[in-house]
Length: 109
Length: 477
Image (tube, rainbow over all chains, first blue to last red; front, side):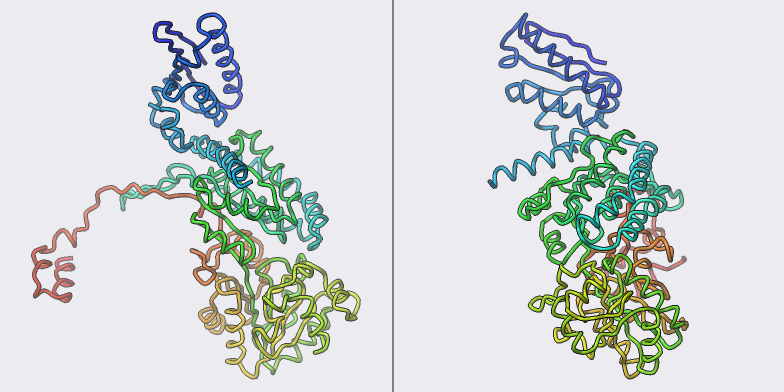
């Protein structure tokens, strides 16, 4: 499951995930995230990918497929360095990002 | 050009490392379901893949390649299916040690032209069983059939829930690219099966490697052996897929007193002894004189094709060509490994001379690989086994099938045979899933009372030698 929350003051889009993010679920979420970013660009802030922030909140996630890792990479790449982070990973997820060699690049907390 | 190759290698390794990250979250049950699905798909494709391999490589016999595919799928699966390879694998309350299996990470697997689909499928199964993504580099002469075997197993594994990109095949052809991927820092282990150059490249890459290279299998037939049985067994092995298994017999060694009997038995069972002139002709086409390595043009060819290429006439239906040689080494090209139905044949004046010949042949490019003995004398079998440097000493058994395991004995079925330090390997075992996990040991407190109860002050006393410390250590225990 994926819910969005946008903080206009801080220009922060929080994507909160829960559950088992397998390949099929990840494919649907990739579209939802892209659509959300696009709608924010169109309606609120055209420069969100320049001066905004995106947070992936992983509390409640118990599994991620490699396709979800790709979503993290592609989303992070769209923003300036430091403007993307992944928060609330349990140790199991932390280790997954560590093995993928992405915990620093994706600012996993 | 170099930059684009680096980029290409990075893309492959990124995919593999993401697959590894996903894979390490799997439990034993899901892992086993994936392995089962892949094995079934591979086994179901055994005939088509065997035919493809022979058609593409021009090497071997499809019916035998089919059996190799069965070994690489069904027999390997049966040997690993009940193994614990995920998470907690053992717990001993007495020692307080608990073992946990962790995957290694991306494995770079090199597969040979001689056993392409069977080796690829076997490597895929042991990698899936251990939750390691595999990147296969196929021999360029067998690129299509290897890729097809990988595709079949990948699709089945994926449908069973395996991570995307857990099986990848890199394009054949570019040695530079292969070496670049092999040396990539994200590779956890190289599993190389092939020629000397390739195995050396694997070990020189800077990454951990299990590299298994050539053999040069001597087989001793003792006077106590059942000679017709021994000869029949050797023929069934050396003619299996036209001698392409690296554990196939290369030389037959007998004492002079049984030479005639053994010779007649080979002839009776449709083998042909080359004349000295014919040996010269076969040598020229079978062995590259400069390097003393086998010619790729005769690998896996039938005796008839080899005879034709050498320009000699042999009886129709000949299964194996035998060359009686007087020595071992450069002057005798056929004393080297040749993966084709050609056997060197030696008659030694006595028992010691025969065993000495076996040792010479064993050390001529085949240290640590395999050897065979036909005898009905347990003492002799043990004596021979201790003198020979081989990971597998196969007794009264065809060496090809015997060394690979799973059919004639209870060795672990495998298409990558460890050759020990003699072959620059870390193990003499048949490589399987258990070699592809890191075992972590959780060690609980269990005091060594002998050490704890000893008077530790004595260890600081220069006048206490090892005799005193031995007594102190064992005192009251």
